[in-house]
Length: 465
Image 1 (cartoon, rainbow, N blue to C red):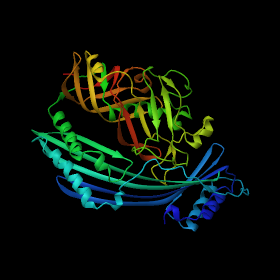
Image 2: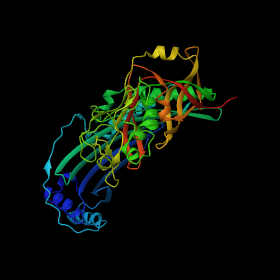
Image 3: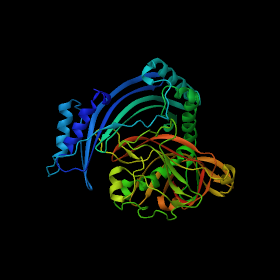
Image 4: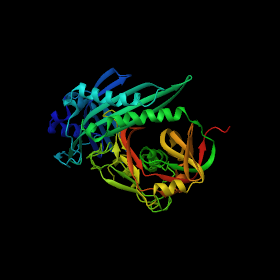
């Protein structure tokens, strides 16, 4: 049973049932998601995986108390039983007002031309082979190449006691290539990935061969690299996925899930200067066909563009409905969850540092000695303190204002509130990159981005000889 097959009258009954013990707000979230993942390993199909998820989440509020339950039983009996379980967490007995749902259509700014489910597996496999074969020809040291083509068709419907009934269909496609370079018993890896909120036309928007070549080139480059020296230095962080440093080091600390409870270094600082005046940071869920975009969030609030930091001044947080109550601020269209069995909370969508006025050439030439972090890797952050530690997947030393030899084993260590004050040059060429973000409401698609930036002083982890 899909969300659209559940009668409106039943939805109204479910919401009313959930409010019979004193709740002042009720929400029904319905999900139907199909996905397919094709994995190619060394030129052969390794696996084809299909997944189908269907279920409902029901949530109620009573003041600043929230109760949530979920079920995969989408029959009327199963949904009403779930509503009873939620209501049973509260003690009062009341007769809720009748709920009348009215559908709202917010429009779709993310057109899909080729629905992936209508595309033959062989066509997706051909794209994977093209990308992986290109990776294998980069250098004789390439010992292993794998690729994944993922497509997701995510349909949601949200109904609440305020009378809202809204839906969204989110189709996403992503191509990823990973390569390993080997020499004398040593291995180094590289990867490249492109994803958008589109269908199979993704393969017309990108060049599959270029994806494979970039992954393999990174692996070969790092195989021949020496170790990065440790110490404090000036660092230039590349565009695109370099934006993960803002996402992790600052973005999570700007989510209401942390701010509302005072567990963020940015709590209580609206209107204050928190970054270098060159820094403007944005979370925008409305970018057409971008990986982290949506028409509505997972509470039915329309997506919007939120300027978080403008010229160094903190302007906004990312806020969901529940934490909006605690903060006394409106929801910003940032409530997200992995699926129906997760309670939603404030999360990022497409988050980036906006373009500045500095040229890439000026940024690099301004660094007498430092590091060029061309491509960032994974990392971790404590949203309460903002302290972070990130690996650098591809890095080069800068000497005398020129990019020199590649180095491996580099990491960036610091604190979010410090690093955004030390971003003193911001380039013009904004690029975005697709990723997955994990937090309390599960793993969700998010986009990060930035132009090339310069951090005047940051601790670089490495190996001193």
